[in-house]
Image (cartoon, rainbow, N blue to C red):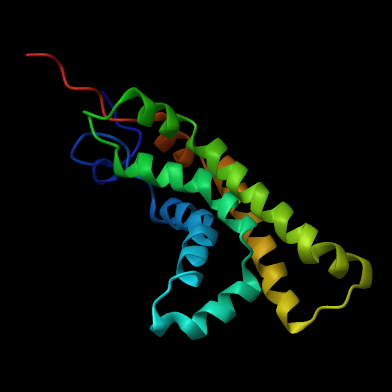
Length: 163
């Protein structure tokens, strides 16, 4: 049997490992969730970050990161003894990440994008919005144009055979 990818592209369970860029995309998709959790951390050390993060992320961003969080959990559970639910979540991983990216893009566009589009004036805070929107589109392009990404989400370690 000829392998389509080099041997180091597979993990110890002979499943195709996610490439580093896919890992970054998964983390980027879950970033609003992580930032919201950091922003509402009651620690006194985080007080300055609280105001800063609330300016850039809204509680609605939490919803955008939930599908990506599911994919990250499925990645952590990507073992032969994983249940059927995690296998199904992993199989639908590209769609869930796309949903997360599109929801984030739509949220950003509805909050600031229309004002930028109508006035063609970029304030300093708006530059970050435009960069985030561009990253959302780039990540979407990567998810659907790179064959290895499709192969990674199609591959899951085989369940153990009964003895």
